[in-house]
Image (cartoon, rainbow, N blue to C red; front, top):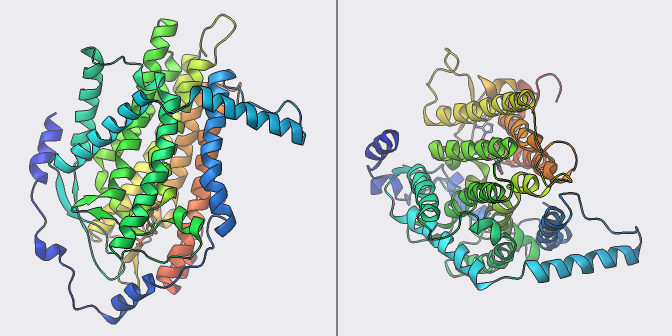
Length: 469
Ligand code: NDP
């Protein structure tokens, strides 16, 4: 607790209004940046006008399929009995009946979810934290943020287990209501996105709209919608989904204890890795302000669904699998100590890369004079005004942070053994996400930086692995 209070004491100084006020003396470049936001955008990402409705409706179906595979098929993927139109029809009808029968939204699930959602909103709004400014947005504006994630994380990690300990609810409550809650959150993600659309329209904050309904619904409307000082995007990105993911693991572990009489080592490992990753995220919370999600993305269904539904309900699939994938005697997967140590080593390598690469960029952006590996950093001073680091990790590859994250993602799956592909869903998805993300970031940087980005790519030709890719 001493670290928490030290951070809080150091962090309660507020940002003065003069830091925040958006000067009316815009440069021509800034004025043009603002004008550009009002221009129509091409519908050319995520498969455009066809791909985005498919993703909007396809992703929830994918999650139901994976859940049904875990819950009803011992963690093996449910498949059509025959590869024919009739076979697929039967498969989807069966899946539909499983959802209607077991994932129908209940009053209890809605009460649990919204109590959770508003508890997190309360913490974000009222817990003291470090006042800081975000990265410059188009037009030069920097938004003020109060970062209290570290304290909120610990408050939640004490309050939620305490509630179970004192008998307010069962420790298995989240697992017991998983499926109905998934449907509640699916519906809420749709409603929330529609409310964002209305909010952006009323406040005239829509940016780069394409005119294609589902494309705009997916990509979003305003970049940083706020109600007063409450930042909706930072909240959804950082709070209700991330911590719920960790709590799902804990709840599933409690179920395993109830069912097996012990918690398997593989569950302990996966839960500890996840909790460590999220605690680290909150400890370095300020770094989120320089990420693509906060700086570049607009806020729409892609992020809303990703943050609220996808992250908590699918990232816990490994522990869910360990609960359901039992042997003939009803016992869970056992892994050897040597194998556990190997997985720990892989996770540690991935985590080291992920953390230090991200921190290096963040520290450089805060103070470009900070030495990197004992030397003055080299950088490209861009015409846009910001600097691109070419020292340290950022001089080896353009996205070693993604490399670290991809290694982590596979380390999270390995404790599940090799019987089924379902627990490897996260590794497969995350590797695909980071490759696609890298491609999108490259395109965005090319647009932002032009020749300066080409020069950076010339000086740092590798993306993920030096001399290979
Ligand atoms: P980055 O942190 O790499 O941010 C990319 C941005 O950084 C660029 O748009 C550019 O923005 C700036 N930049 C690029 N190169 C340089 C350079 N050489 N020097 C200085 N600035 C540079 O990526 P993300 O925001 O996508 O991700 C951050 C982390 O979060 C990653 O580790 C990622 O894997 C992780 N992540 C995890 C997810 C999960 O579900 N577990 C989901 C999404 C991300 P500008 O110049 O405008 O500042």
